[in-house]
Length: 319
Ligand SMILES: NC(=O)c1ccc[n+]([C@@H]2O[C@H](COP(=O)([O-])OP(=O)(O)OC[C@H]3O[C@@H](n4cnc5c(N)ncnc54)[C@H](OP(=O)(O)O)[C@@H]3O)[C@@H](O)[C@H]2O)c1
Ligand SMILES: [Zn+2]
Picture 1: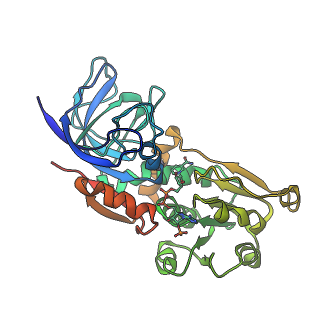
Picture 2: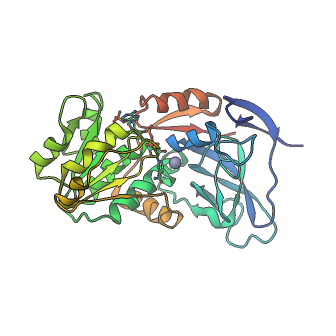
Picture 3: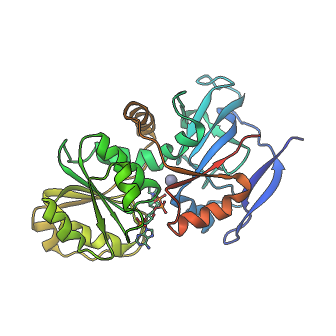
C-alpha cells in the first residue's frame, strides 16, 4: 500500500498533526492529484475549529498539483496536467470540510472542481489566487467602482495584499487600511497610493479627506475593524464584506441613509477562479508568499492567525 504524509485534524478540537496514511484512490468522476503547493487561508480555521462534517480531516483549500490518476468516467482531464482547486470542491463538496484538502502529498478531487494552471505561474504563486485572490478579485470586478474611483482595502493579510494589487492594476486609487505602521512600506510597494493606520487615525475621516471610497473591501475578521468603514464611503459607495466573523456589527439606519450606502457580502465563487488566474497573469499580480514545508503547517497557520505573515503562507509539497 502506498503511503503519504499529511497534516490531519484527527477529531474536533484536536490540534493538527503530521500523519502517514494510505494515498487515497479516486472514485468515479474524481482524479488523484500529487499536491505541489497549498496556501494557508484564514478559512482553514473552520476545519481546525470543528466545522467539518466528519473527522479525521485534512485542511487546505488553495491547492495546486499534478494529476497522476483518473477515476472511472473522467473525461475533462489527462494525467500530467497541473490543476488547481479552491473552496468549492465540485459535486456540492467543500474542500477540507466535506472532503480532504491539500495539506498532504496527495488528494482526490472531483473533475468539475478543477481549473488548469498556466505555465506563467509557479504552483506556490498560483495556490493563493484560488481562494484569497479569487475572492477579492471578483469582489472588485463585480463592485460599483469604475476606473479612477477610490477602492480601499481593510486588513492586509492574504486577501488584503492581493486586493491592493488587483485594485491598483485595475486602475483604482487604492487605499490600504491596517493596524500600525508595520505594513505601510510593503502595502505601498504592492501599489497602495494611500495608507491609513487604524490604530492612530480616524479611518472614516481619513477616507473622507481623500474624497470618500466608492468601495471598501473588508477582510479583517473583526467587528471593530468593519464598523467604522461605512462612514468612509462617498455618495453611493459600498462596503463589501469578505471577512468571516460572527460578531454583530453596529450600524444605525442613518449610516445607510447618509449617502445611500450599501453593505454587501462576497463569497468565493468557483466560476471566477479562472478569470482571477488569467487577470493575475495578464496584469502581473503575484501573491507575496512565505514558503513552509508540509511538516511546518502548524507553525505557518499560527503565524497567519497572529497576522504576522507577509502576506500568504504557502506549503511547498514536492516529493
Ligand atoms: N468571503 C470569502 O469567500 C472568503 C474567502 C477567503 C477568506 N475569507 C475570510 O477572509 C478573512 C481574511 O482571510 P485571510 O486569509 O486574508 O486572513 P489573514 O491572512 O489572517 O489576514 C487577515 C488580516 O486581517 C487583519 N486582522 C486580523 N485579525 C484582526 C483583528 N482581530 N482585528 C483587526 N484586524 C485583524 C490583519 O491585517 P492587519 O494587520 O493589516 O490589520 C490580518 O492580516 C478571514 O475571515 C477568512 O475566513 C473569506
Ligand atoms: Zn480560503
